[in-house]
Length: 427
Image 1: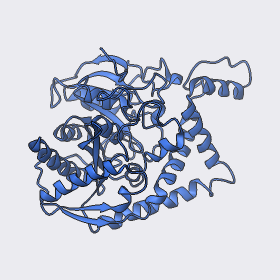
Image 2: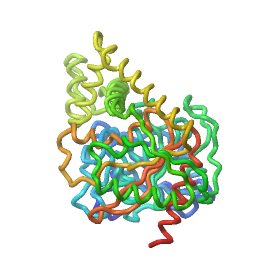
Image 3: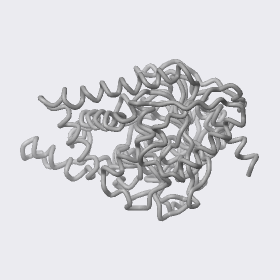
Image 4: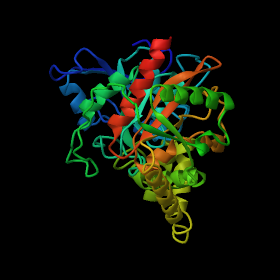
């Protein structure tokens, strides 16, 4: 497989198990989703050579519908990043401008679909990791409602936030993949029996769309905001009712998200100790020395940073000061969404505050974290959210983000389809 973008970590050819709705399609799978007999590294050197003995439930579903799995895609190590530059196997380049990032953490999946190396792809979204590469690469990407898609076989980073979802070149393909993926799985206790039932019509007359002022505030490139406003005006022309609104808890969302995800990462990544998982080490010294050595050699700098911060937030004397307060802030985000959805059906805004960054541009961790401000609220609340391309700035795509009530993925996808169809007719 020619891969000048470094979109794949491992090429493979997992054949379909039978004919179905995905027959003949090539699907790429993010490398934190287990594939039987094919390495699954999570973009980390610590898991180099690990081969799962089973398929994730979503992979079983794809192969049962005729899909051919063509490779495991590059990603920020354990999903920690929005550029794919944190991968232990080098960054994935943007197919539109290779001097720029593809987004993250599902950057390999986004680039593979945008470049035509795969027809469809799976990613995972903890704080925007499907929607970010979709926006940066000019394709569609959907984060389902938390619990709509089984996480069995997804290597855990932050359990209460992450969700597997599809990336594709069209919203119609997103709908097809969701029809396959949304199936109950008793092996995931958070998975609900809510099949996805939609044949997109694009009819949005009378749909109320809220536009929170905070989604166009500090840090959002005015050129990006202008492109998204034009897209929202197009939805209004199609018959939607656009309503200005506010989401005061946005000022807490980013801190609540990073405190939560880092704390959960500290717990989840404790298993990578060289005994249960991870690089083999000499255990003749003390266990603590061996544990330190395997993580020193195997983890990249961003993973080490987040694990240490998360461990600190959970430590005695600081739990109440940090993690517990983050959960109070998370509740405020949920309450704001609940209040807004009493008045509107959907919420719209930019997916990312800027176009795709240049390689190396976000070397400062804080500036990288701030770029997640528009995507993390949906993860904190567990609501569905989609990103679709709506225009360009400097020749690079801009994403329109649509969010909906819990388990109303169908409305979110249908509204995205309406915009996509209207925009396609205007080209």
